[in-house]
Length: 125
Picture 1 (spheres, rainbow, N blue to C red):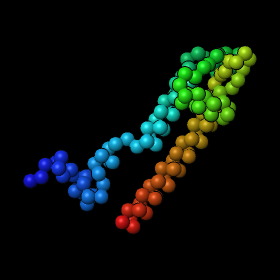
Picture 2 (cartoon, rainbow, N blue to C red):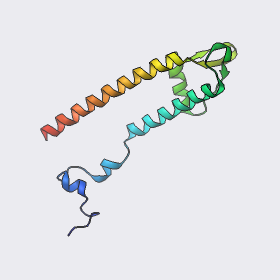
Picture 3 (spheres, rainbow, N blue to C red):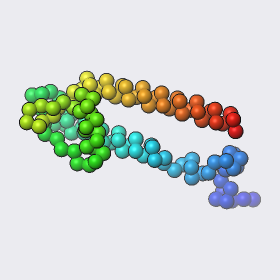
Picture 4 (cartoon, rainbow, N blue to C red):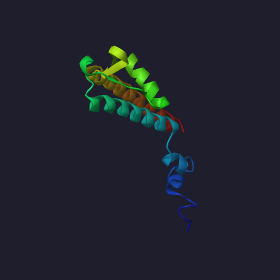
């Protein structure tokens, strides 16, 4: 009888076409997406905890990490973060909600498209 390590179930069930490592290893794209989401959360949390949700309550902000700087720039281009006087910024909650909704729709479309491609590839194989 073969041991699990020598003959993992994933390999047996997949006819030897998939590796166990590829099934459980994080993919680079998903790792990046997680890092981006975490950076966005840190930025939004900074402004919410400071109460900076209007021009009157704007606060200073300096992104620490490269990924936070890039997300900060993206969020300013999208109008989620709005420049105030003296280099202060505030969070526009309505713009954040709109941007989040659009991002979720794009992600959902990409997931459906990926599933269709995977199904097509599986059907061909």
